[in-house]
Length: 351
Image (cartoon, one colour):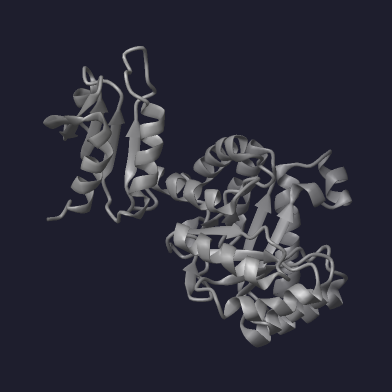
């Protein structure tokens, strides 16, 4: 069961599954009880391009805070629940657009039933989440350790439990910090699960490690047509998760829009601060709504040729640089004017 074939589920006003565009998610790292801080972070995430946001709900105070948070944000809000089924019910009552639970750790079947009944009453989807770190002991024993097969069996068992209570507005996620295990688990789950899949490599690490692991894992999964929503889990500012997710989707051809910046790796011919210039260009173009490629090259010798596949580019020399369009030199400018000239060209691109 792959992306085009999964059941469509409405999360707030965002449709996932059934061939809908892959949605980008993140999770706040503020205390949800601190409404002001949480809203501030969500608004920054919205600006960056986050489409669904998840908040931890470890207390009743956090569950009640959701109502005030919802009034000040513009994207669907997901409540992340563990251990106490009453938190899930309270989160739904306070306007959560979706709840994330592991039916195996919020109490017995009666507790799960109570949550499902409340979700059904309010028409709130449930995301069933299974993590390799909390795989049931009997499945670990059955498969001789934590395995992709065990993750899939655990997820499907929990799906059936909710289905048995008469509810099918479900999203499923199975996560592991083991990238290749995670890939294999998604390949197997996609064959057996009719529901949209939320994909991510959990506990992937810091900005460098997390981006590498997530890019490989999400790339392998999404490129097979598996996955309906994604989160790039990074230890750090969640805005970085959105930047990475957008670039992963764009690189895979699953999303258009936004300027793509390409730059050379530098060499002994480089006579300018190319690293600094490339970072400045990347920051500068973030608010320009064009779907084009911009090249930043450090050498006026090879720059025009290397930039020929880009729509526009700049190449630096000693105290001066070139403005290039489709590999053709347009004009020579002073080095300190390169950035300003490039921005002017981009701002007036359609004129």
